[in-house]
Length: 405
Ligand code: SF4
Image 1 (cartoon, rainbow, N blue to C red):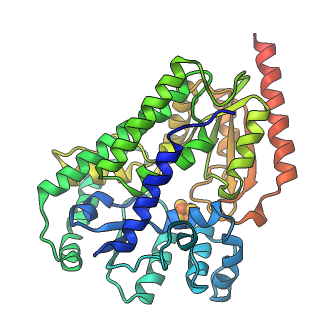
Image 2 (tube, rainbow, N blue to C red; image 1 turned 135 degrees about the vertical axis):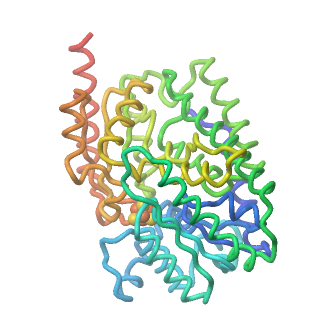
Image 3 (cartoon, rainbow, N blue to C red; image 1 turned 45 degrees about the horizontal axis):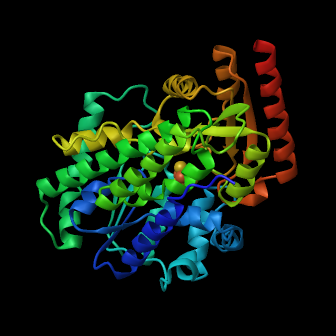
């Protein structure tokens, strides 16, 4: 069975990260595509509640905790990262204890959110600001942009700059532009390597696919702006490039290549990965894993470039811009079809709700399929139905390829 050997190093990198959080003198909480580099330049260790939500999903514990959040008055169909995470907090439980020996989630000295992805993070993080009586900062960029304008960059950049006094107060450190430049430089280098890692899947057979990338993206999410993330992706890239040369990949006979749009179904990553392998299909690229490629980071212009990088993310683009980006990905990765995951508790990161897949198919003649599920709440996922749908879709793609040959 194909295995990525760097996975053992990944486990140790992630273990060190979580253990370090437990020991850190100052911790900032941040949204996953928030201004992590600026926070890191003040010496904060950074904790990402969404990463914790994903952990709750992957360990299938979210379902146990969601009811506690619903009891507090939150709806059961809002973001299951939020409901799972707050529920775990209310139950005083976390997988960080079992997996990394932490007594609990790290207490925040500063909480920062960015609504570039959704407004849910505002509600979620404000809950904790009240619980911990902690200072909180919100960044509010323009939403659903076609192309970002200079005025919009300046607006977000000014909001980043306005964070400085609160960061100085919470961290006890003065702002140092050179430290900020350095973290941006490290983030840029790590994200460039991550981009190359994902690009290895342009080869056939692909040496890494969506399901493995969802795990290997850990450092680019939680350790941006560090040497550790950069070094990890250097090693992973080296392994994958060797596999490409040796023509070793996820499947031996790659009959079909598929693109995955939307969130992972964290509790079903492994079984879904196996399902595609059994059907000689590789899920070679995804919107989700690509969302941590930040081409705009520039250490010479740290504020404006990070404002741009964090505002032009895929989730924050207009349908027109998304269609173009998806088509580009479909061409670059030579995909035969696209699967759109309609995550029932996250319409923000689901592009199937307003008819985009059908419009995409009609415009580009690339077959599409919508699968219903969720990031963490498995009540919204029907395994039997999904397997049948996926296998039927793969069969259709195979027969289309034969017809077109
Ligand atoms: S983008 Fe979706 S999954 Fe992520 S925090 Fe917002 S609502 Fe939750």
